[in-house]
Length: 214
Length: 327
Image (tube, rainbow over all chains, first blue to last red; front, side, top):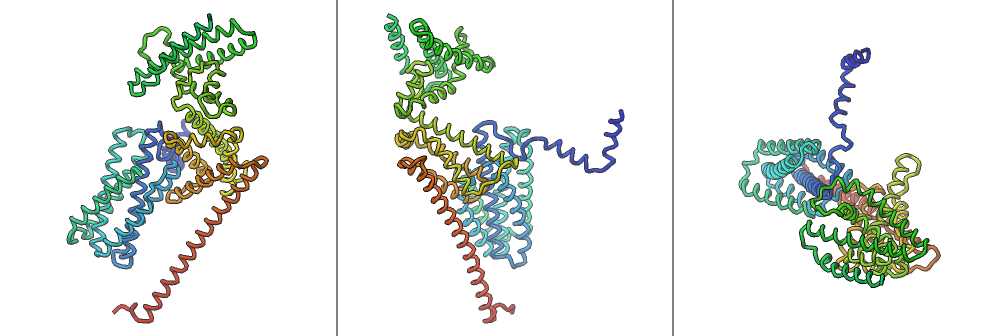
């Protein structure tokens, strides 16, 4: 009886204990984001997914670096820097997950390093609209890719992959924000926008396909 | 008379062998029933040989065979509870025994190969060693039919056993460091100790190891041996503390693979006491790697300094010529 009274009075003491208890409740699992694999097949599937996501974030990082190298001191510099910082956070998270789960990174990383920087720099040379068009194309590809991963995870076992789904949804929302930012800043006013956009998206699809396998 | 009966039964068994061995493309059900019949036959032959032995031989050998038998029965009864939970549509009455054998098939193979390792110094890495190993467990030497890639299976089993032992040792050391009971080793020392520990496991078989290495180089064994090598190198680096997620992941593993392979080759030709020449070679190679890494780092920082210097010179030039002013 006395204990019940004590427990009832706990929320009034401070928000702190209940907040901690609440977060402990939802993350009472022993792992952080990726559940320990049930079998070889699931491990393969999970590693492939993480590998390609890591490669994607790495490539996006390099694209923004290329754009900053050209437009860093212009008016759009701060905007690109802001988007780049968010991508850096994504990459750091994936690095953490890869190290924790002993996932092999894709062997094509040096290629994505060069290609990403070259793509960012060359589209930035077309001016602010070029850089924004590149951003729109790339972010659209990445969002589509994350969406298909979310669909696959939801189809297989949403309960098991709750944390992973939450993380991918958050990243996908960030990428959609970047996409919308690009559109807001006159991406479509670039001459040859449709051509550039489709070319870049084709390249992204090829990169995703290859990174899953190598 | 008993020998004639045994020969007849062995003949019947051998005639059943091609159908067992040549059924890789059949469905699971067919394959499993064939395997079960094979195991049943092997078990029957084992029982007969036991009864023959116990009737004809001295008490000591019969007691050893009964202890083998007991060990086997204890093992099968242990698997009984697991087998009982399995669903099997076969209505055969002696099926329970066959089910237990089926559940322990991989363990049976592992047991035979483990027993065969004792005979490797005598027969080399070959089918004879496996046959001798099977016989030492009280099974018929026809059990070698279970290993179509006999010597390859034996070597790969030994290698994966060594890798598991190494992982256990490394995990134990890791725990000790986490608990604060041991000091964290420097990377070079850690790699050196890990490679030495792993290569020392070859010492009992060092005479026949060249044969084993050549077996591993056979085309059908290469994928498996590469897989074992890469998992071992990955484990060593993981416990050494490597958490890289870029090209370093690949370069580190490539370096360690080269280190391990060259040291293994040196060990084969080493005749110094306790292989101290091999360990000296390993020390020198690790020192080379460390030197290379230091040099690479120095080159990188020099390069960065030079680049900054050039940028500074370019800006100065632009200032001097007045190109930097906004007009």
